Length: 74
Image (cartoon, rainbow, N blue to C red; front, side):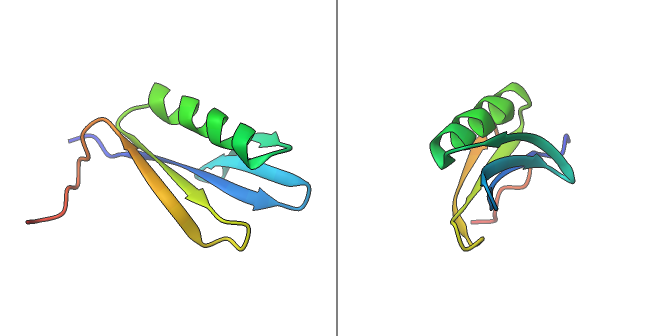
């Protein structure tokens, strides 16, 4: 079974960035533009998950694309 690839939309000093592991996919002025880029990257690399963080770094929401290889029991 293929592991799910994770992308994160996270705040940084001068805006927002999209990360894939320790690699920065891109830097963006607005959260909306980072979210769009992260969504595009995650959809192109399925199975994947896009984890969106709030300004304080806490997780706001998650989006899973294609079947989750690790679905919860029940």
